[in-house]
Image 1 (cartoon, helix red, strand yellow):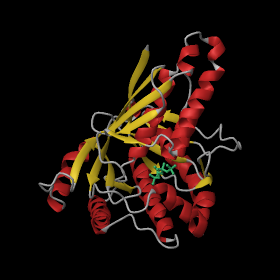
Image 2: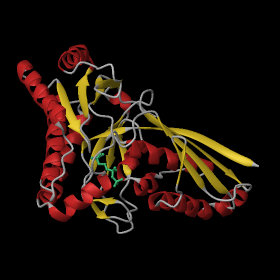
Image 3: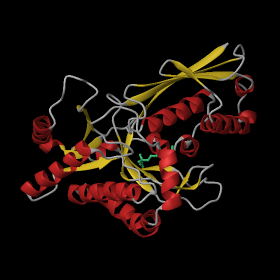
Length: 342
Ligand code: DP6
């Protein structure tokens, strides 16, 4: 027979950025990070995995196109799940058959891939979640998702999530933890401003490698900035202190992009529109004498804004005025979201 499982996984947007690995193979970061998981109604990945003794080999389809199953990170995740399943075999009879099966994986995003919208995070989180369910593995598997894509481990939980750096050499303590559920801060809103839905210039994996190799700033950041910032940010979340939350979010995004500029040769993820958005947000906040909106940018030009519900109509009007939505849907489109438990 065939057993089949379907899961969805949400996107997460970091407010303390992960950039740089201390172990490439295990995907261990040089600093901890913290993110907000978005609700799945607008941005999510959906994966179906099936196992059958009739399948001749493992296969994978991404957005309808078959991909190579030999991709190292994919192999790592599959291998780790099967290893865990083998360990539990003696506890469960039904595992016997499953372990001899090949799997077929079908994964889809409902948002642009590789546009710096953390599609790999939702994608790998979803893959690992569905494989774990298929093989009847319960408990934390964020350390497996992490080996697919670092940021994916944070998409395994809803709400406010921390990815601890860990000290162990095998990476077993570099895992994701929820620090607060989504309903802890129900007024918080996330606005994704799609500046450009095209593929990004330099992928994060390669980009951060070059940064770690060539930037002096990234070392300073990891050792002397992020550790205290992570604590402050956790506190700001726990106290629902939007002023501190917003200020650290913007500063951390700016420092991440500064390390990209400090990379040699330099990496530019922000474009002119991104810079206009940064200026607009600062002018807007200055006008109100407090932080009403905070921007953050990942490895691409798209902006993600954090704000409170009461200010959403005004901020939306502001953005519609200065960055009017074009008829072309891939340009400057808005995605409204709120953090949500998965
Ligand atoms: C800028 O998780 O995509 O979005 O571990 O090499 O797959 P790999 O990198 P990835 O990097 C994400 C970087 C970021 C910041 C963040 O999400 O923390």
